[in-house]
Image (cartoon, rainbow over all chains, first blue to last red; front, side, top):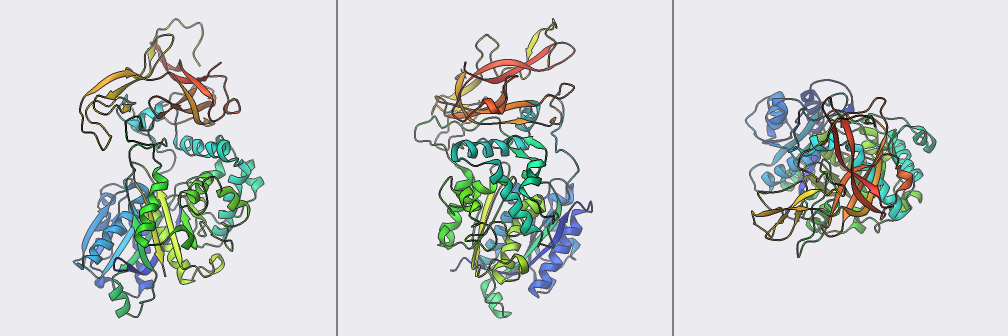
Length: 395
Length: 147
C-alpha cells in the first residue's frame, strides 16, 4: 500500500539504571540502528526525537540534541512529546515526512535517564493540579493499575495466580533478551512472596522505571528497494488517536472519570479505541496478528491489552495465558521481548523499543525468543494526558 | 489517625469540593448546555465535543453509588500526602454515580478492607479525617459501604 514505509534499521542501548546522560543512550541506539541499516549518517535527512521531560532543556529538544550529538549535517529535526507514546508520535512525524516526499531516510530516536525514587508533584496547596490532588488524597500510580486488576478479578474471575503467570512468562522471555534490564527467571511462588503494594498487585506485578534508548532508521519503500532491502519489514499503520469523550475508565492522574450523562454521549474505553485505527489503516484484523508487544505497566494490564487488541473476547485473556497461547511457541505470543516486566519503563524510548522488538521478530533474528514465522506484529501503549499508540508492522 | 479527644475544629482538606453536613455531597458543576457533570468543578468550557457552552451551575453530586473497583495502599505515598506515624494502610474505592454517569475515586472509611468490598456493592459518601494540622483536623470525602 502507498502509505507504508520501510524499517531499515533498529537499535537499542540496553535498559538499566546506568545513571548516565540520556544522550549517550540515544546516540548508542542511533549508531546501532544506522549500522543495522547500512545507511551512512549523512544520508539521514530527518531526525525525529521523542522528548524526555526529566533531563532538562536537551530533553525538550531531543531531535536537535541527538542530531547535534551525531554531528550536525544539515538534516531537519522534530521533537515529539506524547508521554509513553512519544516514540510513536516521533515515528509518525518521520512517516509523514517520507510519504510527503520531503525526505527518503529518517532517524527516529528516544532515550531517557530516570531519577531514583517516587516521582512526586511540587508541594504547597495546589488543588487546581490533579496530580497534587490525588497524591494528597493518597492515590499513587499503583492505585490505578490495582483498580483495573481487581475489576478483572471480580468481573472475569482472574486470580492473583494468573497475574503471577504473566510475570513468570515475561521473565522467561526476558531472560533470553540481552537488552533487558531484568534477566532473572521467576516462579509464581516468587511473585506471591513479594510484598503487596496495592491489593491485588504485588511488587513483582508492577514495572520499574529504567534508563534506556531505542532508535529506528526508516525510509521510503523506493529507497529500501534501491539499496537492496525491498523485503525489509514495513510500518503498515500508526495510531496515535486521542480518547473520545466520555472516558469511562478512571485514568491517572484524575480523581474522577468524565460524565457520560449528556444525550448522545456514551462511556468509552481509550485503550480499546487505540488499535481500531491501526487495524483499519493496515487493512488487517486481529486474526492476522502473529505477535504483540503491549504496555505491561502491571501484569494484569497485559491481560487488558490482549482484549483491547481483540486477540480474544473480552474477559478471556487469562484463559489464553493459562493455555500457554501468549507464550513464545504459543498461538499468539505477547511480549516476547520480556515486556516492561523485564525492561522497566524508559518513557520516550519505550514505544520505539516495542517496534525494535517486532522488527527483529519479523526478520527472524530474535534467537531463543523467536516467534516462528512471524509476519505481522502489533504494539500498544498508553500514557498520561490522553496519549497512546498502536503500531502495526508487517513483512 | 486523629486524637478523639482533640478539640480542634474540622476543616475541609480541599476547600469547596464537598459540603460539610451530616449527609455530605461532593460539589461539582453541570453544563447548562448539555447537562454533562464535572468533578472537580468545570466553569469555563465544556469538554463534551458536541457542546460549546460556557455556562455552568454548581450542583451537589449523588452521595451514593456502586463500586467500580477497589484496592488499598500498603506503602506510604510521598508528599503532599500526610501520613500518620506509624503508617496505616488504607482502602481505596472507585464508585460509579448513576445519575452523573461518572466514577469518583476516594479513600474508604477506616476499618473497611478490600476483603469487605465487591464490584457493584452500594456505597455512600461520608467525611473522615485525612490528617491533622496544628490548627485543625482536615477532613475529606471517603466511601463507606451502605449498611
